[in-house]
Structures are given as structure tokens and as C-alpha cells.
Image 1 (tube, rainbow, N blue to C red):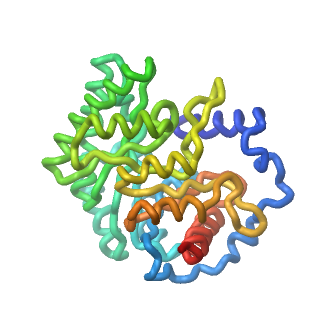
Image 2: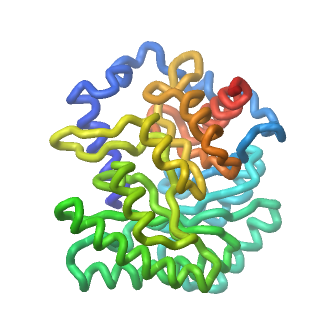
Length: 319
């Protein structure tokens, strides 16, 4: 079972057992499937300060079940959700990074649906901040093909993880070295290397911004995620979501709107989307915010629609 899914399940278990986000323990006021499905799919207003994209992870249930494949991603985004930009996840086409025939088909399907490809999110290619030099070099090498694939598809970035075990300074040093190497390669291809706050040290904004600053490359940035500020599962340690978003946004080359559960009025249960969007707006960001529905109580369709609706309605009320 892939690392990201395992991490999510472990995190969910800890959250429920430890009392974090106590609202998750009550199901009585959760948005129901039929209510989310029935939300109006209004056109995305042109006056929003940001644009909306769809992260492929939101469709993981349909992809795992085989109901759709990555080749269907662009048409699904456009024709079902009215979204014209997408963010791929490499594990859903992990053996196709160097398959020119497949990538040509994938690119054509995006073009045929007038959908823009933005990012490939890279998982399961090794830890870029491991202290083992051989393993770290292998992880770097594994990412090169995805930079090439991103360029071919017309993406602006690949999203990577700065994961590694060791003390804070050692792991930072390893991450700086790997990211610097990837950025040098990415510069030649016109591709950004962006790091998500994705658990461990990377969910500590002070650590992550230090790493990015030390890399010192224009094509090195961050993909701030609304919901990934868990630094440690045990002992439990997390960073304040709103303070974290404020600290990460100056380095943002994209934003991920992580969503899980919604209450009966359509608000997100564990984070205030309006408050986060105000932070994003105040930073001067006007790029794409990607819908990343990660919940399990709603179907993919319902979760994506609920997140899309909440993003639009919350943004309309901002000052």
C-alpha cells in the first residue's frame, strides 16, 4: 500500500484517538452525500482573485477502482466539474514517465478538452532528504524523468517531498543539496521544483522556508497545503494552520485546498476556508488553488463539489 495513503490513515487514527479536532468525532452534523451532490455547479466567477484547478488525488477512489484512468482526468475535470486546469499525481501513471506514446496521448486529451496541465505531484521515488548519500542520489535520479515528463505535458512544476530521518539540521542539509541539484536540472527545462508541507519537518514552516531560502533558486518554491501541518504523529505535534499559511505563502508557486469533512452548512470541519483564503489573498497570490479532497465519508464527486462550492462562496465574501 502506497506511503501517502498509509500516512493519511495513520494520521486519521491518531487524530480520532487523541482528541485532536474533536469535531471529527461527531457525525450528526456532517454534510450528507445527497446534499453535497445536489450543490449547484455554477461557472467559476471570473472576478475571483485566484483560479481553480483539480488535483488528481481527489479522484483516487475512482482511479483505484478502475472506473477511470489518468487518461480520463482532463475530460473528467472539464466535463463533470467545469474545471480547466489539472494537477497530476505520478503514482497513478508511475510506469509511464518515459512512455512517449502514452504522454503524447495524455497531452492530446488535455488539449482536446481545453484543459491546462499545471503540476505533477511526485511520490514514492525515494526520500530527497535522507541522510544516506547513495539513497539520496538515487531519489534525485528518480525525479529527473518526471521533470522531463512535466515539460512535455506543459506543466510549470513538479511537486516533491522533502522527507528524511535524522536531526533537524542534518535533514535540512540533505534537502538543500537534493533540491539544489533538481533545480539546476529543472532550470534547463523551464520547470519549477516545489515542496509541499507534507508531514515531518516539512510541515514546520520555519524549517521549510529556511530550506527554500538556502537553495536560493528562482525555480524553487512551496506548494502550501491547507491541511498538512502535522509535524509528528507521536508525540503529537502540529503547527497552527493559519500562522503556517502566512509563513509559507511568500514562497508559493501554487496552493492546495485540502479538504476532508464538511458540516451540514457546507463549512469545512477542521479549518476555516474564509480565513485561509484571506491569508492567501493578502499575500498577493493570484494563481491556481487546487482542489484536493482527501475525505472518506463523501464520494469523490460529492467531496470535489463541496470543496469547489466552498472555495467560491468563501472567496466572494473576502475584503
